[in-house]
Image 1 (cartoon, rainbow, N blue to C red):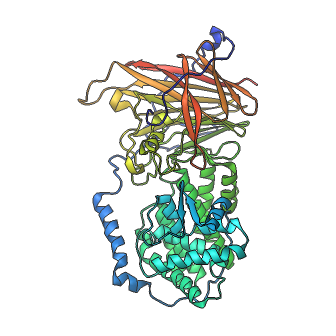
Image 2 (image 1 turned 120 degrees about the horizontal axis):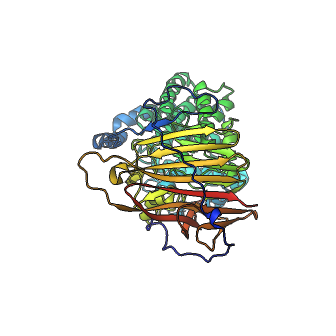
Image 3 (image 1 turned 180 degrees about the vertical axis):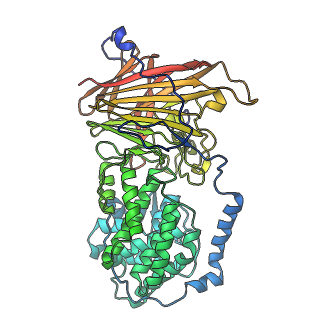
Length: 616
């Protein structure tokens, strides 16, 4: 955590003395019972659930070197005469429909385009000096420019008549550089698909010209891009990129004449891509909320294309949205904002509401996404979100975080306990150590042993060895919801299993927790385990929470922006207040604080109870 947070300092104390009876909280744990060896065989009866096990696939190392080289050399073939020959064909005279864009652009970025530069990924790219063929920029900026996502922002900045000349000039410049040259990244499958969707949604901006030569070039590029996707969509990287690429094939089939054969071909490919992206609960196999959002966005824009043509929405798209939206809502707080998980920043309730409205799906948030690995516990105006799943496989990981058994807690519109989040959203000019630190266990509200990650954090968003087994027992009753979870991320290195018990009272005014380190039998001839291991249990606080250490050192008073008072109490050790940070929706780093319970644990393990309670 030293790479992420500045040196800790303790804040001044201001609170009343608490009695010894208040300080020594009763533990909520029970004796550990053996879990069932089978996985999800018998359905639970009533509100009682059986203990489930999630096992991570072993020896998963993502794409092999051979597979990476194959992808690389395949992209080189795009410049061959054979591929160029594939792209030739009849150009359409017009698009068959101009679908509405279900999303609203960023007027601030649109005004920047009118002023002569792209403002994206913390950088300003001057348009006058921009060469679309040799553009060097951050990946986010490249995606934004080559996908024509800027059309949405430009449309939001001014009336159409004002924006048309700017849009036509930019499109013309892009065509000069890329119409005859098929290369990466401009013609990358997912970007090409997004370009088709964005061009169709904003056709009035780029196809209103009376210049017939310009119009024919735009329509020719549209048809060439569709033919390109016919050949490359199924070779895009598995996951979000492949799903997006196939949405472009289906959209082109609906928007260009004689598209029925392509539509049949495209919908079959889209079905395969969705099956390779979504798990059984409707959550992305990468476990990344940002990937889930982008998939819903692409499918929602495709839904708009079906509507513009007056066609019934494909059951493939309808079913995918019906599964993906509730799963994503399962990671939202009481106000509808998104929690900070797997590299995602804290996305606002307004952004989430726009996304859900565009999807056309009305559903309740999914409370138990056992395969996706998230648990949502609502009670009154309080919501607790928990990562109770195994880390994503390396092949699917996007910006994987070592966050197993971490939780977030909100009350009304205010976040009380959070994760730092935002590894995918911070500006590219920030030090790489910061992004890596934001993915660490210490950047999440959970227990960290010996300042090491429960799962190894690797480069390029992947995760290495660590957590292989997570057990979960959830029990809902009229009085409370109880989660009993364990993970084995520290078992091989330190001979201990982390068990976390959480009990949220039905009115949402009290959350009791207990973190337990249980010794496990030593296996093999590994190195001897240390007799004493340092630990830290971190509770990162929301940015609008004012924290004051209790005078006895065993608790913290939390004043929320709405004036309500909460109390954190420890039953195991004194606590400290240290500096922390939180990354907001725009990638801005916001200073905050964290409560830390720390100490050392012997080989026999230990129990550490705590309480978060509303005081009025």
